[in-house]
Length: 351
Image (tube, helix red, strand yellow):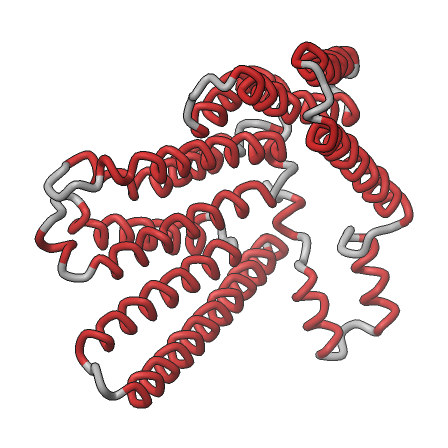
């Protein structure tokens, strides 16, 4: 049985037809417009409404935060708490009243953001002495039911960002304690951001075919994949900069290359052969270039102490060569995808 989405040509295929003379300029514009590759007036109107709604929400939240920052010393502690709690209650009430609508999700996002403002105000008033990561961890825990009920990809991305900040502050705040040589727990700390975001990416990729609200946001897995690539790159750079310490004073950190290569191989395999997305592939290639460059620089500093010009030349040639290979590989990958799509469409037309 033929499926409509698989027979729709891509924009690049239409442009190739126009370049080959099979389509005129007017025919190309008409095909792009009818297939939705060129937005019409209704699409621009929807985009404008969404952009203005997002901008208005961000400006209101920024106004509340800057109001506290400017008038902090002059406000009583009860006034501070009331001014933070009232907008939160109002946002939650409007989100409940407008549930299922775009404005309701915007108010829900405002409520999630204002929860963090309220927690920060309480922490500043009473000076509880709690660590900064506890603020973000409590923020994530308290808003998790709202985020789950909102069914909005951007809201989940914001929540994941809060969790990442909490984890980053936890690692930074306790690194001096856990980084004692021979400590097994310290070795696992740099792995946590990569493991967290990789798990989030796997969960998203596994759930989006089953949930309608996930399928309408192709940007979400790309953002999570980029965040995961950033964490993997930071982990690889950290391992490269350890030098000889990674073989002597560390127990688990010596296995970091295996974790990094496992992430890189899984990313390249899944997004090249299964879901076919060029953004995570480009992120993986860039991560490999950065980590390899840092390792090369570190190795040259240890090997060629007095030959700075030769080291710089070798590093430049290596970066240029790796970049050229990555671009060539990505271009061949996209061409292979286009040929596979064209062959599949031809077989379906013949059937």
